[in-house]
Length: 172
Image (cartoon, rainbow, N blue to C red; front, side, top):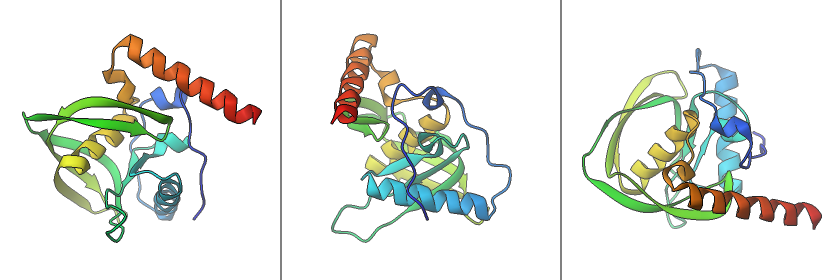
């Protein structure tokens, strides 16, 4: 396992649509392990492959809190197959948009079909934080960031703040 660098906006790869994973092999399993290690180290609760510059449809998620043992989910080619009509607003953040948060409205429940790390098709139904996280990470695979749900004014304010933070870190 290896820690990977997380891309930060405005890296253009974050806005690209990813290719489906053709074959689930040891390389894909190693990628998922690297993604989990990178996500935990950040720390975060979700990470999509394009956030580390790999343009494939793979995500990892773990919404267990500090008091619970880790419950990692590794998903290849995930797709939302249904969503509830009910919506809720959660404050979202993103490892590719450090230290910035915004209230985003999404469906409360989703159903997701995906391949597990052995290439076996699985389905999961989720609500609450897990549903939000699944939608957020699957959006990454389509080149969509949570800031895309905001007004242009709010989106530009966040981009400027992130660029200022990055310049401050580089000069330190």
